[in-house]
Amino acid sequence: MKATFDSLYTPTISKKDYDEAVSKLNSRVEEVWKYICKVGKRKISWWAFSNDVDLGRGNGSTGGQFDPTTDKEWKK
Figure: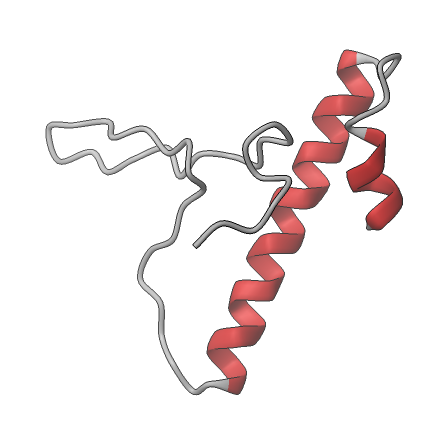
């Protein structure tokens, strides 16, 4: 997974490879959340990346996606 993450910062990455890497990272984050909830015996009804967009009119949100520019470092 680190190689996938690091590939996002390669200046010559293709759009296809970039999109595939982001998709893999999105899936991995979902797996981690599920594991945290299972181990902690908790339920989570919602989580999102920092670039989540509210769809309004009761339609929820996009959930956002991993963004290598803003999500590279852990922020509290």
